[in-house]
Amino acid sequence: MSTTAGAIALVCRFDAQEWAEWLPALTAALPGETLVRAEDDHDPAAVEIAIVANPPAGALRRYPRLRLVQSLWAGVDKLLADPTIPTDLPIVRMVDPAMNAAMAETALWAVLTLHRGFHVYARQQRDSRWQPHAQRSADAVHVGVLGQGQMGGEVSRQLRTLGYRVTGWRRGEPLGPVLADSEILVNLLPLTPDTRGLLDTARLRQLPRGAALVNLARGAQVVDADLLAALDDGHLSHAVLDVFHQEPLPADHRYWSHPAVTVLPHVAAQTDARSAARVVAQNLAAWRRGEALAHQVDRRAGY
Image (cartoon, rainbow, N blue to C red; front, side):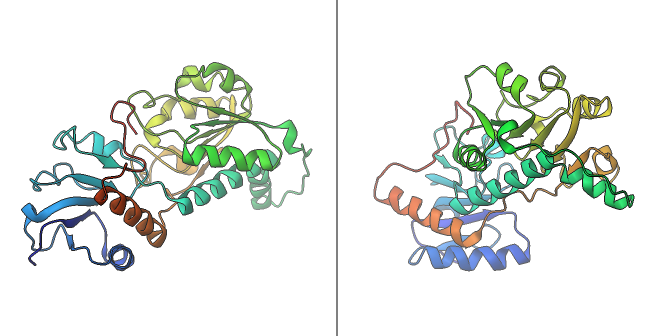
């Protein structure tokens, strides 16, 4: 397949079903653009934009005229860790309103489940045990939300709407007071060198005894052994985990069988192809007009 100047390369590790969803959505959102898949025959020198989804390390260095990288995923830690991507090449992360809404739905479900003890009732049902528990009002429950970006800000807003006492935490603010007050801690931080391993023994033990953790961000931000120890001795009552160091989660991992862990297979907020394609189109149009890019990655901050 030959291309003309200004082509857009789709450098995406998609299976056939994912391509069947994404390619029509991107084609419809980008009329008049020349789109080529990285695995198809094309001239790399004609490509100036790459739309990427979890590309293998080094996959972009074949494009000598590359001027912009647009990610289809919100997380860009793997892109920033790729030493073959020039440090002056603009990278744009995905901020999709549909994904923000989906993440808020999952966070609200998790907080409501933990607050109202629905996970406890699920265990009781398996044991055919009828046992009501005391019910607290939302305004008596303290929820900490780590990260106040697009997703964290929306989660905090919706939790407050339900009446929860929410404290949001931003990078650079003291973390200790937030942890000490959080009966439920929701993690929505980007993965950066500063947040890798953030939730370790020292910080998990700052949560009140009986607190719960909801991790919807990145698995590498939690030290697994430290979390399991806190669950084993009862310092933490439960953990809802959507992300892990290794995905899929190995079949022999203790999280699968631990009675105080709820495992989700990285589904808290899946990217909606149609909505994300519109976001991509808007950003690329702005870039072609010479306007500022929305959600360009700050390499120093790591997101």
